[in-house]
Image (cartoon, rainbow, N blue to C red; front, side):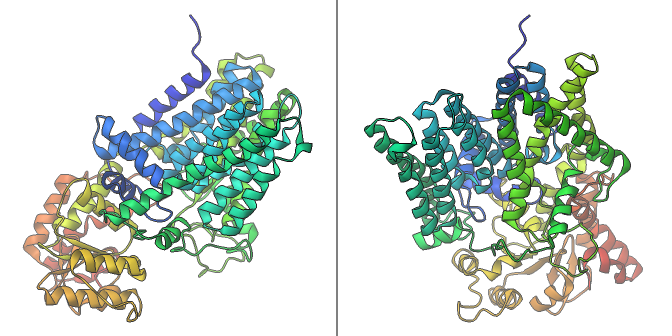
Length: 638
């Protein structure tokens, strides 16, 4: 019986693994926003990711699953595609089916890549696009045909409308396209380097970078760079610029859609000026290369911490090192060293590609992004009140962890051969992360698969008709947007997200859509002041003012002096607990959610919100005992 192609086999196996651990519904963080934006063909948070939204919308229409499950499955397909490309690349470099399969499996089961593959997240699609660029660059280097060079440039350009994180793979694609059996192709190197700089310029809306990129592309026409006809020296630079412009032009979709004001319309890029603001992410402060946002050794330690989560997270799902997990990490570091050493001697060309991916995806990302310390990292010399990232940022380093998995997979097969064991023994070692990560990354657990949607339903249904619901951030807002847009629940409720009140476009949106004008552009004095004005507007209109229990007491006090606990919200007005209503909500929570607690995890978001879902029960018990102080720590009572 003929053995299946390693690329197809690895892609099928990993697609099955991702499918078995796929989130069946919405998850926390950005997934709810992306699912809703895909459903509405809207504009999610900057940079807007219009290509991802178009892909998800089209994909979900043809997949016979719920909208959320379908868009989650798109991430699984994109990551499985990346694994198939990886296997094909490794097979060409090593001529070993076992090494190719093992490399793809090890890379694809690193916890960061696996986690993104099981929810609606742009980083899975970015990984797929990056590997497509690498595949095209490999074909360009092996064949020397211009069409593959142009395809590589096009894949690089598509990072602008998809997500700029895909550009981490661009230097690898350039290396593969440049290095050939006939020697370096410097003309190709200049064309693709220029395409990369053009894409960076478009993504950052920087005229200087665009000009520099165009100059680099034009320099590829120099006659001294190798044999080429006069016509091709003119045609290829022009074609490269045109194809990069075509790839970047997908961002114009946001301009068109914003003019129609879709339900999700972050930044409202309905003019060229606003479009530039969204694409370049000016809503968020961009860290310079220097000074560093955290000490360099802390940033490197953060990277090491994330690496320790990659291969055996189920054995120690905690931010602290554990004996079993860290031992497994050390084993795979050793396997990676063995695989990289063997690869160096076997095929220098593909070795350079994997080395470039590892370097760009780890130290390159670390240097460029200049992140604050992670929320869980502790280190001597790091102040207790130091500014930290809002969440763990391991997903930024997914390309680096992917490269590590490639060499670890190769190394496992190399050691099996050296120890006179069959190649499949090495494949089994490379596949260990499937077992060692499964329990930590699966999204099929009862609580994990239910809490985000049930939380959104509870917030909306606790709000009176036409009420104005104030929420505290992404994990309140995005599941609620999903419930309103995709599920069609309680669209009469106006949701006000406190952090977004700092932006003019959002305050204008609340006025335009919900009749809540708030402060004028010249009257804004901070988000809490703006929220107080909006709450006053709501009361004048006879609308209920409601706050999620996630709002801190001092935030609520700016909106109203007294509050009444009701379900998972507080309603402005006299009284302490609406006992009858809260009893009904406590019964609803008991019926809709499992009693069992959530599993241990690096990210405590699900556990925290599962705890908040107990607030109706706690409120009822506190009211009966006439001791409301027990609500202070869990439910932000006062």
